[in-house]
Amino acid sequence: MAEVRLVDIEKRYGGFLAVPKQSLTIHEGEFLVLLGPSGCGKTTTMRMIAGLEDITAGDILIAGARVNDKPPKDRDIAMVFQNYGLYPHMTVRQNIDYPLKLRGMNLADRKARVLETAAKVELDALLDRRPSELSGGQRQRVALARAIVRTPSIFLLDEPLSNLDAKLRVTMRAELKHLHHELGVTTVYVTHDQMEAMTLASRVAVMRDGRIVQLDTPKKIYAEPADLFVAGFIGSPSMNLIDGHISGGLFRADGVELPVDLADRDGVVLGIRPEELDITHDTGAAISGKLYALELTGESTLVTLRNGPSSVCARGHADFEAEIDSPCHLKPRTGARIHLFDRETGERLG
Ligand SMILES: Nc1ncnc2c1ncn2[C@@H]1O[C@H](COP(=O)(O)OP(=O)(O)OP(=O)(O)O)[C@@H](O)[C@H]1O
Ligand SMILES: [Mg+2]
Image (tube, rainbow, N blue to C red; front, side, top):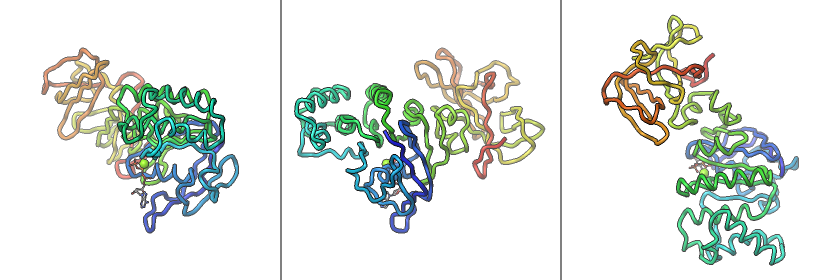
């Protein structure tokens, strides 16, 4: 367990600035998730913490000690790489056992530990195969098992569940959450999957173009996204973002009129989540249009209505039915959060 501090770190690849100067403190025992689109610098940040990538400027401190010049093996880190990084000539058993062997644990303890860990990631039946004889998801689980087989000071997990099927992903997510509860190891976890970020994280760092644009608890990020980018990235289906303007205390766009607490201005984007909209028969409702699509998800129906170019999605009852192209009206639920952003800068207003 250790605190990790990134102080004014920067990473350049030749002339390309992958991570511009920034700082981040990952608290001792925290589960921090780096979330952001492809190419935003998540893996680069992880590799700098692990010592696999030199930093161009700044300092990295682990448990208060500067580690800039420490090789990866001296940082007491266990890592899952995005490309697995398995030893091809070793069996699954040997791959998982390797970190224990390296640390000189006795054979009997190692055997027990490997079996226990393999069971956690549902690999017990595949222990004698080599990586080339495994599917992508199975390889990924070997990588995960190799990381969690011992208790390091820090876990760095780069999309460790990305290749698993939906069911296994949910099982493994719970497994990781439990493991973190049990061991309390400081964990940095990379994902594209906002659901994974929300469910696992103590705090989420949302990244864009190498920069952290918001660092907060999942609750706060969901309830109060700092800008348009975060608003659109967190939540599934994503937040409705409607282009319009404010006049006379109302946000206005085609088919939309919603009271807001902001002075008149142009170039405003209003955000409201699908789960905070109700379908109504009231023709004077805040949002009106024609029904465009109905998608049953099981526990609910996603209702999309269109008005001109803009579409708005609401999460309705599973048994909601209506004719496509029929008039449709939506109203915010009581207590619904209305978010307002500046269209140009993306910044949150009010
Ligand atoms: N060795 C390298 N040389 C040059 N540019 C690189 C190198 N490694 C990464 N980059 C660039 O740095 C940026 C960040 O890459 P990084 O791998 O950290 O992204 P990522 O957030 O992990 O993306 P993904 O979600 O696709 O894995 C990208 O624009 C990438 O092209
Ligand atoms: Mg990556």
